[in-house]
Image (cartoon, rainbow, N blue to C red):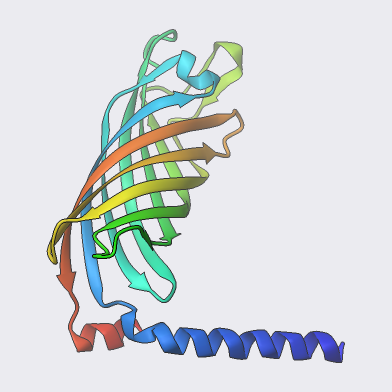
Length: 199
């Protein structure tokens, strides 16, 4: 028991010392990103519904070892087999990603990350369709996403990225898909007062 407590205390002190060393970088800027999104693969649900191109909005900021983010992504799924069974989908998320710079100027980076949140779906009809697909008019379920992006910093104010992600939503039916995205970012430096507020 004492050994476990000592280990936890050591880990806590180690994390505190590391985060203190990097805290001056936290919340140093805010990135506002607009994205275009498309589905290019998934499970059997895509045999019956056809996703259209979507869009999203994201906000991120540096936070110690990585970056915190929040955002929303919208897409429309049109009916293919079942009449009037289309639906709107929104993925509301928070996430964390780590920036690994691959250029000396730190303008090109590889960025893996993870997102968790809720997928909200708004169906055209409250109905049961063939093959066990049952939808309420409005549904909301936990969703997670693993993302990999290549990011380019154009200058101090602008940047863009392209990404691929695997998203899975825990509905009563299997809902998994591969998402491709491209985003354009506008970057603002934060004031000292805003940094203190976030911290």
